[in-house]
Length: 422
Image 1: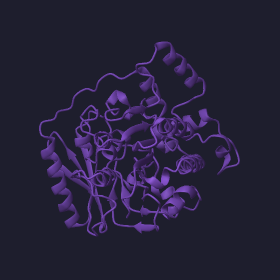
Image 2: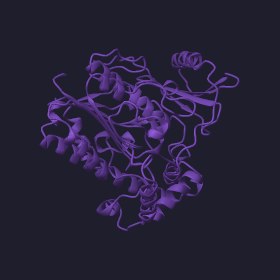
Image 3: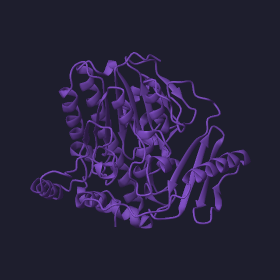
Image 4: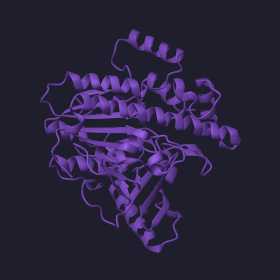
């Protein structure tokens, strides 16, 4: 794969599960842009997030470290991201998203020259109040992909022509509540559902999954798939804009997701802190500068590999968690995943692994260090997972739980709308 590139473009979608993409065999054509991307580079068909929810998955993606290293017990960023690494290498660095959990309130602006998290921390109070009132009026929970594109392209256009850059766009459209805009609202169903009705259904699915009827279940999927199609189109528009500027052919492009979303497969909706495939199997595409012949890679890979790929590309030492995606993968690769328990102050830890041979799941009680295997029929996989859990336990040391810092009221409101708060 060619290394003749100047820029690095990382696009990630929140809550985008791999098996709802048409290039993964889904029955709907939800992802024509990503389907085409799969034909222009490497398509990793068995990629897994390092965790199942944003607070641990995005830090792992941006650092290449497992979540228990990437963030502290209060979920603040605890190690350097690829933005810091690339800034040291002379790249201009820009991040654009609207997920409060990876905002500047948790330290994620570190290493970015431009960090637009769609929040108004530090701005004039009257501006913040006016924005908050407008958001409530529009039932707005996040910046749409179209807005993220506009903001990030404006930043790119502000750079000198010879300035190398790293840009990270994180799109929230596929995250619930599922409220596809405009014509997308009726893409997979005839009747239109109001945003408030969609948000109410989404909240109920999280709080009382047993109450969701068959028709409501299908409605949630229809709306989710429509959001995927919308987000796919906007990713295509962003890539077209890079192409028009002559930048796409000069860039290493990576597209992935932080985690997936569940629709009752294991008795829950959304993405609670379990490690099942529906919330950890994510899309992953790597397109080198100038494109290449498409190639599917079925060996299990991890979102930790994204940082490893970028570090190797700039000649840096690769962190221990990942393997560069541009190198031939080992057929016996073992990918590990982890998540804290549902309660952020819980002592429960969940671990899992994926290999070509199968998967394995266990839970560890931090207070007693007792490990219980939930699903694991293969002895060799169990032994591999046990060794990994032992290693992570040693790394934890004496790090006790501590209360997180207070966060801004605007963050609390956004988190509630997105289903994170009661």
